[in-house]
Image (cartoon, rainbow, N blue to C red; front, side):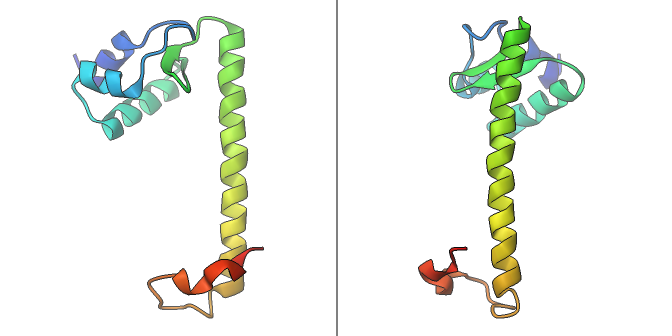
Length: 112
């Protein structure tokens, strides 16, 4: 049985029965990065593996799937905002700090 199959067999159905990533790693005899890679692979192949603050579960209802999508959309929005702010800083200071390895010289005045 490969890692994808092991993980899929360990993930419970329903949001009321999540399994934590740590417990999943122990039971599947894997590491975090490999677990995450396997779960992403399974999701790309149509498995409805959801996650919340308590762990992973397979969606049993449309409401569970909708809730998960809502969580992911919020995360995407936050990540998008972070990327936009970082790009503004890059545009503003890129030529000034070319070749430097550290940005600690920006201090608090780099806020946009």
